[in-house]
Image 1 (cartoon, rainbow, N blue to C red):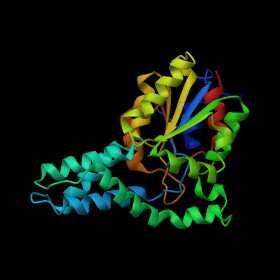
Image 2: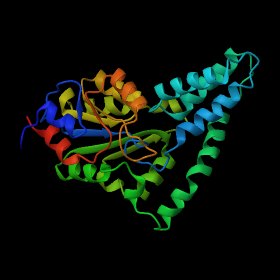
Image 3: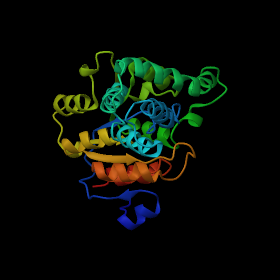
Length: 278
């Protein structure tokens, strides 16, 4: 394959932050929402709006602008973890401001009800064949996953969204045939997290770090991947526009230790060449 310089890649929307040992990859892990799927695009404003409203009802709240910034920061930092962790944090923030919080699970249910109102039409369109998977996926992601599978790379998907919803939405995008495992949040949230999935893959297949790559738009999966010396690709997709970089995501992914930053998978051929060239 033709080698690529860092300058060449950066002109192709593949930002190389750290040199990595390439050509060894055997296993890949993908986050779901915002990395592959756009079915839940808009979830962050819904969650942040709900939490900001609840915190503004507490006795000792700051200004709405300050509350919004606080909520956006911790929601972003916890993106990639199970949703319940964001709700646990919400309950703590309510208590810290003199409020009496509900159980985190109650907040999770309220958030999910609000989100489903936002995305139900998208799900119906996919179920009825009125939309094709490519319309609801990060550009180029489906082609890239298919190319990895064709190359013999074992692919896994892990999401902080409840597993039953992940499975259904993955099926709507036609993903199950390309993945060796699909994992999502469980009711007993302590029995699942992305680090558990990554550690299991590394241990079960006796991998060295450079044989493992992850793709994600959240702080969590990037940190978890770097903890085992894997290759971490940050996907800083502007989900609403379906093109370009979300600078907030980019800065967070860089801080988490991402080796590469991409806006999406449109340049999947070049990305494949880079990752698999020695």
